[in-house]
Image (cartoon, rainbow, N blue to C red; front, side, top):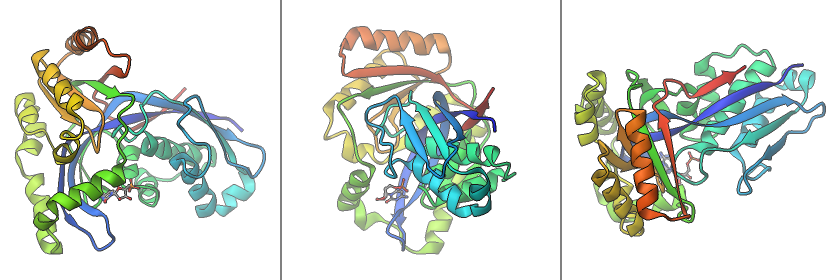
Length: 314
Ligand code: C5P
């Protein structure tokens, strides 16, 4: 049986608003998610046994069930027992390029690639929607990582409305290796400072999602008005993360001084991104910041906005 190689894209949030509380203990969100072309490469092949085996070239990536990619493979084995009986387990090798614990959905994107890859390996013929529904069981960002492109995400992040592609934009991504933020910590801390403003009534929450859908950033994406998109960038997690990490505030300031269109933290951090309208401009800003800060703890990447989340590579 053949093996499959998949490219799993990172995502950034152009907008992340924490709207309220949900009965399941999660937060109700309104987010604009964007795939970017900084990708992990996964190879998936039959293991020849019942075992699921994960190998990765990055020391911080676990090979057991604490890795979302492992849980994605386990989920496929339990959802499709006949295929598992016929084809057995899988070897998954992950070539990591997306920084870990960075707010770039690297783990979720790997899990999405495993769902798509095992669908192909086992000839299941699942639709994208079916892969997204499986992804919901694994994590809030996994459905978006399956779909990719540009989308408004509501609910706990799993309800997706596609938005027009923004493929003319580029990002410079910057991550301090030593600054690792736990998503669960970020939500808990946010709750402590802002819980009184949370919306709880389901009708009100639904109306709020509609309001964002017809709001300025979605309109600006539709008209590809980059100036308004950058004015409307928002991430509520900045309120709790930036005061703890002054170096991230300084990084945002450097990006603006270097001429970026706009800058924001992605997800619960700690990646800071800057938007540009050309690869040349992104490359220039990256090298300016590298020279100015000259900090071995700071890593930078340039990527283009991507219209897809998972790509099957030849
Ligand atoms: O869904 P996922 O496993 O990615 O979520 C990680 C953690 O982030 C959850 O345990 C929860 O604490 C928090 N979370 C939340 N509301 C969301 C998404 C995540 O509170 N909408």
